[in-house]
Amino acid sequence: MKNSMENLVLAGALLLHALSISGCGTLYMNAPPGADIKLLSRDAPATVKIEKHIWFKWWGGQPLHPEEAHAASIIKDAGLREARIRMTNTLADGLYSIIPGVFGFPRRTMIVEGNRDITPAPRTLSRP
Image (cartoon, rainbow, N blue to C red; front, side, top):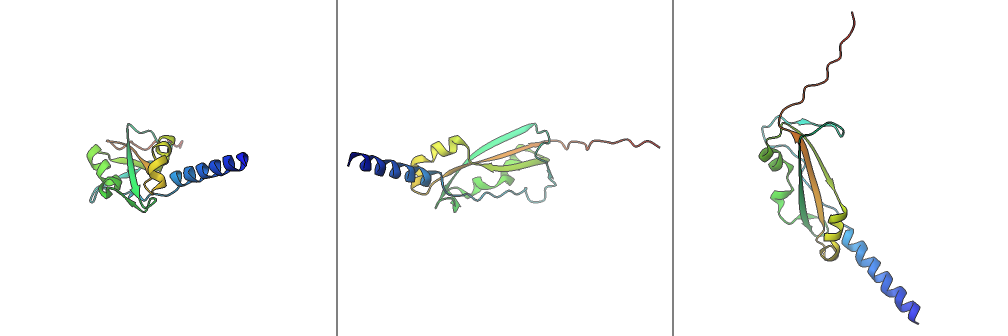
């Protein structure tokens, strides 16, 4: 009887953990209106890195503060001319979401990297 109770408690704990890390999140990966922003490739160098932690409600259906979920405001405030934007679910996000995630409030991290000046394209010299 004791083993079945331990198994039930373990199954309940795993279910709560799965609920806490589940969900998605919608971020707006956009540029400021009227801005000419160059997209950076994954391996291009960047001099600026900004991480923003965003809380969601309804298991990621809507951000708690929609204005925080727009990359355009970060790009504008940082004065970036080149940008790379990604969303991730870090270990810290998972740990912070353990209790609130069960109730539908997960956390995600938006990372905006870029440069304030446009990096010149590498030149290749051709031989005549």
